[in-house]
Amino acid sequence: MTKPALWLGLALAVAVGCGDSPAGGADPAPLPGTVYGEGVECTLAVSVSELSDNIERYVGKRVRVEGLVTDVCPKRGCWIKLASDREYESLLFKVQDGVIVFPMSLKGKYAVADGVARNIELDLEQSRRHLAHKAEEKGETFDPTTVKAPITYVRLDGVGALVRDRK
Image (cartoon, rainbow, N blue to C red):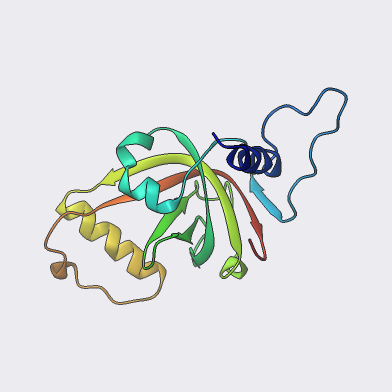
């Protein structure tokens, strides 16, 4: 690893509170922002596109992703969508209902999210019910006959998050 890359890695580790503090030193200052759930611990950091492209490497592992909050569950605040580093792609960050509640005001803010990677494979009937539920949450109409094939999607089962105004 080159020296600049090593320093960047160390800076990122300190920025999220990873690792032990130096002997006799204080813990690094936490990042500003609002903490949800358990917050963000030092976990494997991956981009949304890396997670999506190589989900088999990450299934069942705790990972950290970052991105702009593009959507929030309008009913219970039980999920947020994070924009990918790749255009037209996002990741669902889902928490147990009532354990963490994300307010609608998070749209447009920047989130660092910590959770367990999952690859959700649905059969055709499950796909229709899932998409019908999503439409209902948003008050949209949905015709289940338009779904002709099962869907698969990547999801992060949330442990905690840190949300702030900008990156």
